[in-house]
Amino acid sequence: MATRKSPDRHIPDRHFPVRPNLDQLKHQAKDLLRAVKQGDPAAITELRTHHPKAIDSAGVKPEDVKLADAQAALARSYGLPNWPRLVTACRMTDAIWRGDVEAVRALVLKDPRLLHENARGTADSNWGPPMSYAANVGQDAIIAMLREMGAENLQHAFDRACLQGQIETARRLHAMGARVLPGMVMGPCETLNPEGLAFLLELGAELADDHGDRLAPVALLLQTYCRGPESKHRCLELVAERGVALPDTPVMALHRGRIDLLEAHLRRDPQLVARTFSHEEIYPPELGCSPDHSLALHGTPLAGTTLLHICVDFDEIEIARWLIDHGADPNARASLRKRLRFVPDESTHEYRDVTPLSWGERFHGPGVYGHTWISQSAMQLIKDRGGHE
Image 1 (tube, rainbow, N blue to C red):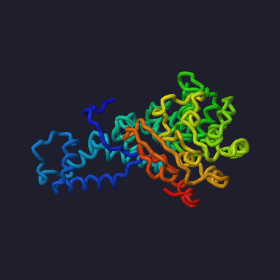
Image 2 (image 1 turned 180 degrees about the horizontal axis):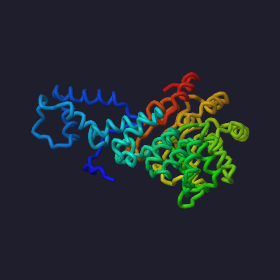
Image 3 (image 1 turned 135 degrees about the horizontal axis):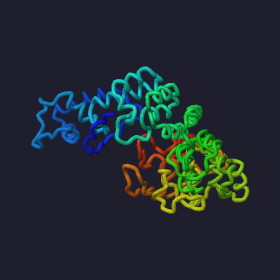
């Protein structure tokens, strides 16, 4: 099979969407061309940076730039080698989302290399080649067709189906020969996917990472960047059913969504709703959470906050409502200091004497593509109950 020539190691500065929109990308290329022709310095710099051919540093002549130049630069800014590959990626991913078996087949027949390349066309993509990409969105007919055409990424497709909670797809892939491998439970723990986690446990997966660490999945459930309170509650109950001893603390009751346990803590400690909590109380080291505060994937700074501040982060609307109903001050103040990791801005930020609302407004997210790490609905509830900045 012919292999596609590896492009030069060009560093992209844009994130190519999981489901790219070709019409929008065409508009972006035209906007870039227009800005270059108007002599916009930022647009000219972008063209120089990403165009595959060296451009005279003495200056670009706007009248000489063509749409093809803008398209080439735009594609490379997204991490693709050229504009035609970007177009193919858009058509492939769109066909998979729509479940258009024949369109996917036609693309692969035209260029068989697509069967093994990332569907999004970028060098790095955890959504994988077309069969894995289809597993993410539960397109079983496309998976069957691609398998018949020679797709080999069966195991990765199975892993992605479990991670995304596409259980019927995962069952089919397992029947095709995919296996449960050590550490696979970490995927649904990262994405807070109780269906995927329960399915893997049903198949006999060990609740541990690929090194056999039985606390690693629990730590990931607590520290992941993903948000979804109901899903998180169900995942934590699954690990508790497997014998993991979750501590009887107010913050763990919040993690689990257990208002009944919070009520018991409030009876023992009438000042509970005003208390602040340390990082170790929120992310217990005894459950495998990292001792390095900056390595916690939760994204938002939480040490030194009240339970109400924590609700703003974890989207715990019902618990926020319960806390306020039981005397929590919607304007309780706390001071926070945090350096986030693995995000565009890794500098240390301080938030002094902030209310839950002002902290949410000032937090320096969004951090990584697609994540804000702040619950707007919880903030609105606090505002409705008298909270202010």
